[in-house]
Length: 434
Ligand code: ACO
Image (cartoon, helix red, strand yellow):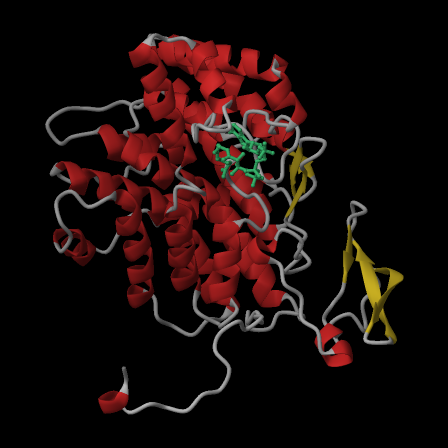
C-alpha cells in the first residue's frame, strides 16, 4: 500500500460497514490538512468512493502550492503570493515552482539566458499555422502547437531532456500564443528579440508589425509579468489534474501540457474573465447601474450571476484579486484609458460586499474580476485572455507534472465507477428488433 512507509500518518479512522470495522490511516500535511487514505479501501471492504467533481478527493501529495480558501491564503513553495507579486518576477517564480527553491543569482541568470535563447520556433513550424483557418481561436491553436512540439523533440526522456523540454516550453509559449493571434489577424509573424524581457518580448510579438518600430511600455510589461506570476499555479484544479492524469500514462511533457491547455479552454475554468468583461460592458451599455444588476444576480428566478465573484475553494477574498485591484488602477491611469469599466467593477464589489446575499454565501471577488479589465486596458483582445492564462499557468503545470513523475506513489490515473446501466441481457439480432 502507498502509505506503508510513510511518516505522515497522523491517526487511524474506523469505518463500520457490512458488520466489520475497517481501520484506515489518516494522513496529515505540513499545514495541518488531514485526509483519509483509502488506497486499501476496495481490497479491505469491496467499496469504492463516489465523488463527482472530486470535491473531497485528494489525488496526490504535493509540495508545490498551498491554498487555504477560508483564510484567503495562496503560497507557492511556502512563499506568500503577496511577497512574490511585490518582489519577484515571472521567470524567478517559474524556477521556484519547477525546482522548489528560489534561484541564486547565477541560476536565475543562466535560466533567463536559456529561456531567452529558445524562443524561436523551427522555421518550418510557420507552415503549421497556415494549415489552420484564418479565424482559428488562439486556444485550440496553442494546444495543437504545443502537442506538435513533441514531433520536433522526440528523444528519450532523460532528466537532461526533460530539463530542455521545460526551458523550450517556457521559452516558446509566448511565441506560439502571439503567433496564434497574428495568424487570426492575417498579420505577419513578429520574431522574438533577445534584448527584451519575457513579458516585453511577448508584447512586441503581439503588437509589433514589420512596418514600424514597436517599443513595449515597461509599465505594461511589468503589469503583464505580475499577471503571469499570479496565475502561475493553483494546485489540483481541472487543467492541472488533466496534465497529471495524461502524464501518469508516461505521455511526454508536451503532450501532457497540450491536454492541460485544452482543459483550460472551457468557460468554467479559464474563460471566466472574458465573461466579466462582457458583463461590465453590458452594464455600461444599459445604464451603468450596478445596483440594478446585482438585484438580478440575487433573483433565484434569474440565471444571471455576478461573474468574477465566488470560488469553489476561496470562501474569503481571493488574494490575487486584491493585488490585481490595485494594479488595475495604476495600469489604467498609465494608459489613459477610460475608467468606466473599472468604476463599475468597483461599485459592484462595494455593493456586493455589503449585501446580505453575497455575505451569507461567502462570495468575494476572484482573480478574474479585475484581470480582464487590465488585459483590455493593455490592448489584449478578449479571445486571447485564456491564452494569457496558459502562459501564466505553464510553470505550475510543469512543476506538478515533474512532481508526479518523481512520486513513488504515482500509478496510472484510473478512477473507478458505480455502474448504473443495464444488467446482462441477450444480444437481439437486428431482424427481430422491434
Ligand atoms: N453570483 C451570484 N450568486 C452566486 C455566485 C455569483 N457569482 N456564485 C455563487 N452564487 C450563489 C449560488 O447561486 C448558490 O446560491 P444558493 O445557495 O442560494 O443556491 C451559492 O452562491 C453557492 O454557489 P455554487 O454555484 O454552489 O458554488 P460553487 O463553489 O459550486 O461555484 C463558482 C463556484 C462556479 C466559481 C461560482 O461562484 C460562479 O459561478 N461564479 C461566477 C463565475 C466565475 O467567476 N468563475 C471564475 C472562478 S475563478 C477561476 O476559475 C480561475
